[in-house]
Length: 385
Image (cartoon, rainbow, N blue to C red):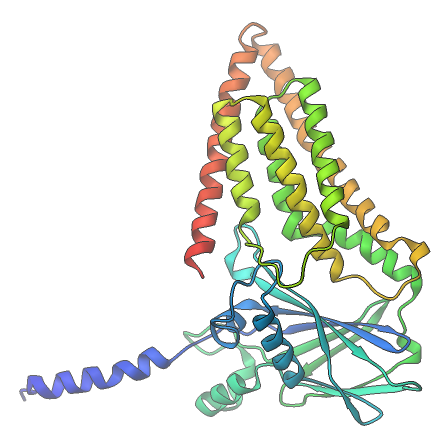
């Protein structure tokens, strides 16, 4: 039987709108961490970024280290609709304090968003209750299409979809609560779950040590800087400038709504790779280290803002947070420096006269590799927008 061409074309083009309108987004559990203070709750939300950036906040502006006011307002409205908090049955609106889009180096699928929200508790609050229904509209669409299997995350040919909120409480490791979207209600008593004072200091230090966002890029940036093979005096000046600029910008207040590109560390890494590969003047190397110090000071300020709470000033929580950063820098620097020292000793052992030339050649190749790597990563981030 011969099918007329016109019927075939009509059937084909009729399928296009349905195909184009179909969107499959991965759904990983939302991580909700609560810090319960007397009279206030700080909530930190960690959520996969894809649905937020491609649907919920599409067209809201550059989601860098400091979000535009339009994007922040929209995010706050959505969070309050997804996460309802009640104090003794009275609804409480959350206020968005900080938002950060975090793109893991070399792992685009692990990109996520951190939201930090505060909830003011009425005097005498003994219990809070609520409901967690993140991405309810998308869950309803998927349930209508696939039925009860949506939450299983095993649909053939589709990304994993888990509509679940995992709740934890800072300072109370034994408290773990998993809230599925089809049974979203929860209740938490206040008194036994208050945040211990000592816990904030430990958490500040630990988060500073294990930070992936700035820690990995910082280690690679320091590696690229050492590939310049600076003289001892130049190296001391460079470390001093980096330290001064990072501390200065860390304590400065960044204006609200300031846009800050997420690929800025890659730009500096590329610049340092060029300087090291082509052996430019030490002055340019020092300028790049100063710019790097300023950048990482701002990054640290953004990370710290997700930890701050109502603690007495004498605790100096910023100093505690910085001590973790300094220790990380010392460990990373000592490891990289140790590798360089062992490498040079090895080359000197093999050929003392040729060691300087061989070291410079190998350092140049390594610097070229790093600048190409940073270019590829920048391209990925820019084309993903």
